[in-house]
Length: 449
Image 1 (cartoon, helix red, strand yellow):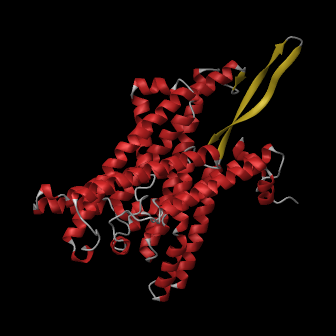
Image 2 (cartoon, rainbow, N blue to C red; image 1 turned 60 degrees about the vertical axis):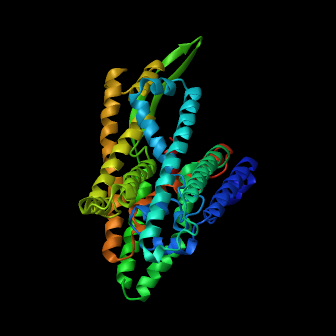
Image 3 (cartoon, rainbow, N blue to C red; image 1 turned 60 degrees about the horizontal axis):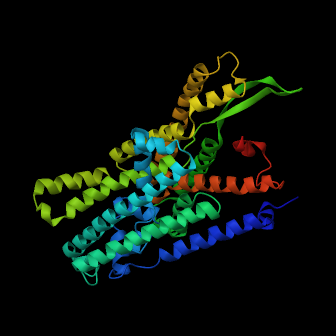
């Protein structure tokens, strides 16, 4: 019986791609340990210990702990993801960008270039906000007095440029992984950051158990629910609805071509992990602005403004009911939005009509497109609600049991989703070269259909 891991290393191209992916992600993890000049990493870690679940805690999750010591990669890939969301939304409403999108590969390269420019601007803006917030904390809290070693306007400029450059480099690393490695580079960067912190978080759970704050039954029940939700995540990522399509026979010369019945697979969740990442990253941005405004000296010290910012910061903190409502709504929205982007029912119906295909009982063309759109809306709604349940239930359970917000649904949705996508790409290389995949079950291979 063949070993898929050994088979992966037996294919020169796949072996090279795996090596490139590993080395590039290793470079990213090394950069996460390099602190920004002028910042005390020990004081920064002490500050982050009090920010779990807040905006800084969520940012620290997506940067793999880089923000926890204010490293050169403290902003991570979040500005690029935020700019990608903005560009995709603008593409649907601006005729010029929509025309570029319809121009094929050249148009996509142009939109990608605009996204890179926007990432630089957004990263510079966020880095300036972050350094100003850090300076305000260092000047107002006695315990954080040694947070910045040499506080000055020159340090603010230097730190902002360092963080912006770090974001540009991380963006480049992600693009190189996508092009020359295996898997989606941006998602893998977030995946590696989350996984790198898992041992530390498991140890914190053990400490809570050792201190008597969590019972053994509570941990066992939580792990059981996690296992069930992981299985549910796999189902949501791989499930699809089959639509029967018939093709009429066509005569080409003396031969009859085509004919027969095939299945058109409609995925329950086309967005995969993208909707979760988009929703979480979009909610970080307003929380950053609130934190910046709260610590801005030019706004004065009006108690009403301070109370308003405290309330807004609390409502936008991870685990608050208002945050959960916004997060759920954005996740559902991005599930539908991404599905509409990657699966155009009109184009599918036109292609079926062009090649003599039709759905039994329906006229080719508009009637087929409307039928596919109706099915897609229903299964996407079910898939989006399933993703919301997977993302929200663990958060509520973890906080109620005192295990910590890190083991929420967002974390393992990203981990499981990215792992499945990466394994799918590795398996596709194996199957193209007539090797066995990771799983013998045809249900897993059915996702290629």
